[in-house]
Length: 114
Image (cartoon, rainbow, N blue to C red; front, top):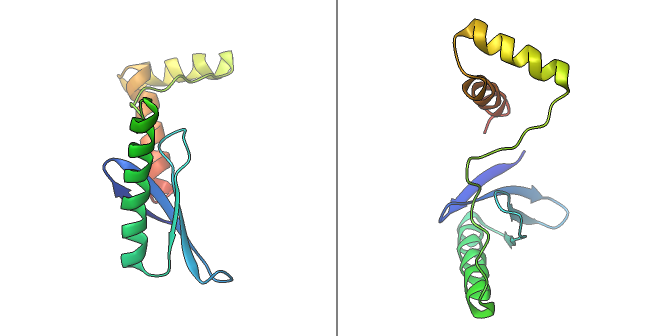
């Protein structure tokens, strides 16, 4: 089972790997890659913080903007018939297509336990 952690808005998913006897984590809300690991929860929290800080320092040293956690904007491509049906469903629900899709995604995320 995966768990989540967060530091400075950078959200990570963490899993315990029994064969390695260690927790492995990866930041999931940016395009760049940030990995970390630890043998205890305290070590894991410290490793996440250090990894994010190292990433930010690395970007600064190179004069690059660090990848920021997602903005909340999503470009979505659907089959035309699905798009049309979603518009109709939103109208029946008395809401905008944006609100309709946002609620559907929110419901799916909750069902996933996140």
